Length: 109
Image (tube, rainbow, N blue to C red; front, side, top):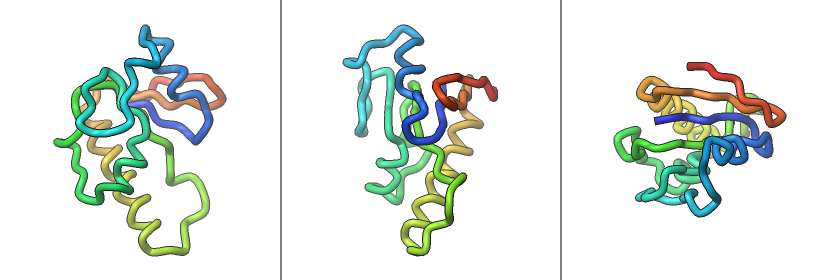
C-alpha cells in the first residue's frame, strides 16, 4: 500500500498518476477495484464506521484535514478526527507514505 496525503489541490492525484497509472485507474468509492483510491476523506464522511481493514492494498489518496481551523460543528470535528486516525493506521500498514505540497512529493516513509 502507498498512502499519499496533502492539502486540497496540491497535486496528489497527478503525483499518483506519474507513478505509471492512467485516470482510468482511479476509483473514488469502495470497493475499489482499481489501483488508486482517491478521496479517502469523502469516504470517511459518508461512512463513519470505515476502518483500515475496509481499505484495499492500493494507492490511497487523502486530503490533509488537520492543518486548518478546527471546525465549530461537532460532526465536522468528529469526521476530521476519524479521518486523521484512519490515516495513522494506514500509514503504519503502508510501504510508502508521501506528502505532496505544491506538486512536490516528499517521502515520509
